[in-house]
Amino acid sequence: MPPRSRQTNEERSARTRAKVLDATIECLLELGYAGTTTTLISERAGVSRGAQLHHFPTKGELVAAAVEHLAQRLGDALQEEAASLPSDGDRVTAAIDLLWSRFSTPLFAAWLELWVAARTDPELAATVRPVEERLTAGLQKQGRAMFAPADASADYEVIALLTFYLMQGLALDRVLGQEGARRRGLREEAAIGAWKQAVEILLATTPVSA
Image 1 (cartoon, rainbow, N blue to C red):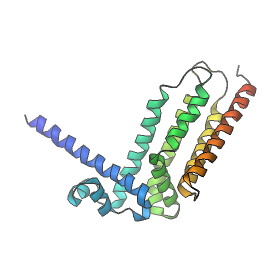
Image 2: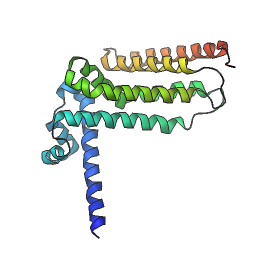
Image 3: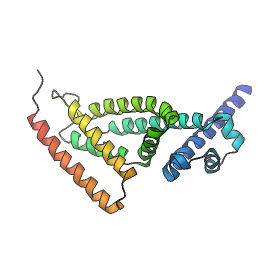
């Protein structure tokens, strides 16, 4: 009986922690890093200040955990959806669409909010940069695997990397840009469509490795 009670307490603690981290991400999206406070986070999460402080005694520790939580969610979502990509000639187009579906989410916008804020905040930068390096490396590794079919002999790495940077730039424009959603959406659609055409040309002319 005692082990069961201990497991229940652990599950309850994990749920509280997840609620606080999700609330942190929501606050970052709506209020930005500067406007995000631990008080607002606890209110949004629906937990007491004591419960929040038990898990995360300082804002720095909370943000550090939120960064890891955010990176994990982004990576897990991409990996899960990548498993359903076709193995035929439509794979590259489908991979581009899948990457943009992840880069255009509120989750990635929250990540970019932290990334931009870290530029002028040394303490935040010390928290964000190590995770950013791991997230970027992981996304790029997944991207390379997504683009190349299992039996591909062509070198897809450069195409995957350029696609990654294009998506990141478009996502950053969403965070910093001032255009309306409709106008921005049309520009994004045009940019992604043009890149798909360019990729088709690149793949058609890429030398096949021996």
